[in-house]
Every structure is written in C-alpha cells, then in structure tokens.
Amino acid sequence: MRILRLLLAALTVQSNILHTFAAAAQDVLTSDLLEWLRDKGAYINAKLVLRHLVPNDPSSPRGIFATEDLDAGEILCSIPPELIVKPNEEHMEGLPDWATYCGTINAVKEAMIIDGEKNTPYGTYLRAQPKAYTPEFWSDPGKKLLMHMLESTRTEQLTEYDELPPHGVDWRFEELKTSCHGDLEDPLYLHAAMLVWARADWEFMVPFYDMLNHSNRKENVKHKFGYTDNIAEIGYEIIADKIEAGGELFLSYNRCKVCHDNYDWFGTPEMFLQFGFVESMPQRWLFDFARIKFDLDWKNGSSDDNETNRGGGGELVATFLVPPSSKGIRLLQEELTRLESFAATYRGKSFEDEGIPKHEWEPLWQYYDALQDALSVVIQSDVALSDDVWALDDNWWVKDGTQTAEDEDHYVLPTESENMAHRDF
Image (cartoon, rainbow, N blue to C red):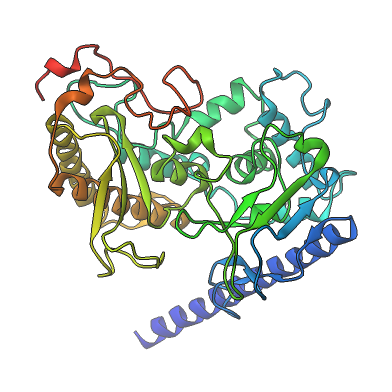
C-alpha cells in the first residue's frame, strides 16, 4: 500500500507539473499576442492586465482586470479590421452567401496553420486553446450520455424534439457537413469550427475581445458599435462602464447591448451547449414542451457569482416570465423524476467506466445539478397557476418582440397540437 501511495503521489506531482507548464506556455502565447496586437496598431488600455483570478495560481481561471479605475465610456480596446479574422471571397468559395460562419471557420483554420503564410500570433494562440470543450464537439460516448440525460421518455410527444434543453447537441456536425462542406476528419477544421461557435462575435473572430469572461450580474463593458455598423471596415471597439481598480471586466454573452436576437430565448442550457460552461446566477430557463419560462436567482440578490446553492450558500427563487400552468408543472415533475432516475443509474460510475473523458464527464454532471436545481425550485414555487398559456400561439415565449416563432435562428420548438389547452397530462 505504501508503494501504491507513493506512486499515486508521484503521478499527482507529475500532473501538477504538466498543468503548470501548460499554463506557463499559455501565458507566453498571450504575452506574444498582446505585443503583436499593439505593434500592428491595436489599442489596448494600459490599465488592463490579463491574469489568473487567483494571482500566481495557474489552476484558476483567467480574466481581464483593471489595474486602475476606469471611467464610464473609456475605451478598453480598439482592434483594427485587418487584425480581425473574417472570411474573404476565397473562404466563401462554394458556400451560400448566408453561411458566413462557414467562411469564418475556413479563415480561422488558415490562421492556425503554423507553417502557413497567413499564420499570426493570434492563430498560434487559437491553435493552443483547449480542444473539444463544448458538448457539440465531445466524444461520441460523451454526447450520447448527455442526449440520453435530456431525452424524455414520455409516451406522448409534445414537440418535434421532445427533450429537456438544450436542443440540438448533435446538430452542429450536420450543419458542418451540409452547409459548410467541411472536412469532419480534419482535427484542425473541427477545432476551428468549435472556436468560431464558442468565441466568435457574429462572423468575426476578434483578438483580445474573445478573452472577456461572461456574467449577467456583473456586466461592465459594452460594444461601441452595433452589428448594423460596418465592423469589417471600422474595426472593433469595447468601452467600459465605471470599473474600480482590481475589478474584472465582464461581458454578457447573451444579454449584451447588441444581443437582441438572443434575449428572449438563449438561456443557461444554450450557454452550456455553445460555450461549454454552466453560468452562475442569474440564470434563464425555458422549457418549451411545458411552456414554462423563468429567471433563477438568489432570494436576496447576492452579487457573489461564486456562491452556490449546493455549497450551502442561499435560497434560489424563480421569477416567472410567463404565467406557469398546472399542466406545465406536472410535466416538469415527470421530467425531474426521470432525471433523478438517470442519476441513480449513472452518477455512481466513473468516467473511465463509461469511456468518457474527464473534461466531458465533470461538466455533464455540473449541468445535471443546474438542471435539477432549476426544476426543483420551479416545482416547489408557491405561485398562482393558470392554463392560459396553452391557448396562446407559438409566440408564447416572446417577451419584448425581438423574435417571433417564424424566425429561424431560435430553438424554441412549437408544440405539436393546436388544442393543447384541452389535454390532460
């Protein structure tokens, strides 16, 4: 046993050394990138520093921090258009005009080819980013288990894809094949595709900007230009709200000032699918099969993003954005029961047992916890119930008219029946 403990200790030390070495290599790539950006005419505010959340701890997340007070409206970065990775005619060859993201994937791949003519420190930096960290790009066993967790076993189908959110875990690969005509056997192409979906802003991959972390509570930066401006010619500028020295810069990935298309429906499940992490509070949840939509937050409005319900932090409460129905609550209770049965079957196993990488196994269960918490809070909420939502049309979920059910770029699935109000569940 003593020898085994020594071996395990040695492996732990070796793992820590490798992790520290990898983090140090990332620091060098980042320093080279920032130096290159400034040399090429980019403006990056001298009051900003990129560092780990816990100083000198390479295992902690990175962020952009203010070293001095920043005034509201102060420019944080200005990236010239020639430094933005975006598609040209060659990247769009053979693609429909609307598939600009496919062209961006081609451009990012080209920038990451180390010996290529178009390689830059930004391309080298992107190439070194973690691989396959969003669920759409997980291993087949990882995606299969996640889809099994989400899939409903209800006998009566209510939507086209009857499942818990997020929808479309395996849709991206079909899009890459049918819309982008991509080489799915090319690891560099797949890495480029994941980076574009996880880090690009619209059709632009913007250096430095893509290092900003997400928060819907602490958002303190904003775009100077909107998507109707000609960003391809004027470049990219991010400005500050008032930020105190030592504060981290945060951008909302789904509720930003120019995120109107996402505002009504793009919540915590969709964030997990596209960006690969479970966001902190506040969260938004939309269960289309039950026609229930709500925001989830701490009862006392805690501003501590690190506080967790499971860690004994506080009480979570739901604010309903559409009046919930008794039928919807019963549907969610049925899904919660099924979800807990799933956990009873699989949670006691190890990622090695299931042939799933650890970097997929752990976030899968983090999302399970978030999903279970959201369902539990809603089911236990003391709120008046009404079945009026079932008499509404497919725009039942729209809050401020930013989208309608006819828009293509949303994953809110219409219910199968036009007469849902008269069904029993």
